[in-house]
Image 1 (cartoon, rainbow, N blue to C red):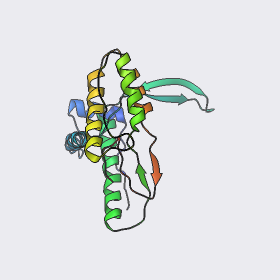
Image 2 (tube, one colour; image 1 turned 90 degrees about the vertical axis):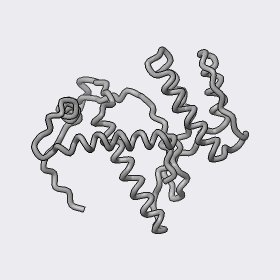
Image 3 (cartoon, helix red, strand yellow; image 1 turned 60 degrees about the vertical axis):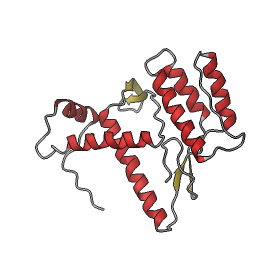
Image 4 (cartoon, rainbow, N blue to C red; image 1 turned 120 degrees about the horizontal axis):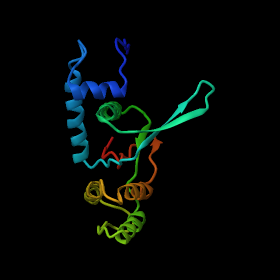
Length: 195
């Protein structure tokens, strides 16, 4: 493909445009892009995607390459917009190549091991948060996997804005296996994606 860039935007600039609804000439479609990205995000959540809320840190370097400042970035609508379209593009490519039987490298993420979930359950209980993660000792069925991802989603919603939000997010992340690349499609638990 050939991409011809006619205008570059910065995240802050896009956030300002979307909040003020004053679109540069020829870019009125940005409102539709933002609205569609939110619908895609809702659909991804419905299928079991787990959204962690961690602050992103950006290092500001001087001309010599030394760190001169550290900034904490917020995850705004413009970031979500890009995130959703990147995930969507990757899934579309993966689904297309898979349907054609063509070889490719997948980004896969296994579901958490039952033992890790039991440790998480005990950790949460020590904080006064009661939740249960039930399943077969070695492996979960598809229904159990969906149920677990929904409970993990709800857990993150329940602690949002509270005193345990950050520690629960980190502990939950530690309960998850790392996402890896593979030539075999095993789905992506964290994104609730089968491909």
